[in-house]
Length: 112
Image (cartoon, rainbow, N blue to C red; front, top):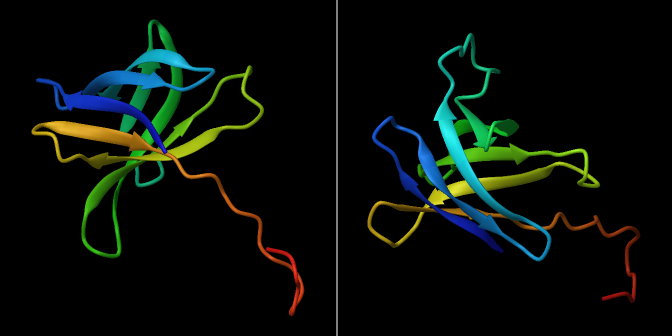
């Protein structure tokens, strides 16, 4: 599911918006100038004057670069884990999300 569209900024960050049935936010991914190690995020995700998430640079099994993104807010039932990937639009990036599926239990289940 597409959550939003972003463009790269002059400061090596990203700016764009997230639009869902319950969210309508302008976001900025700002490079983390205080990154201290591999576990520290590469970007801070900001809306207005609030930090609402973080992003880490990753590479897929197929060799494609992407950002692993976590967005969180006390009003949400759980954090949103999503990914920012290069889109087909020139200089464009898409923030995408997929609902985690529950593991099927038992063999031979007739449920579908």
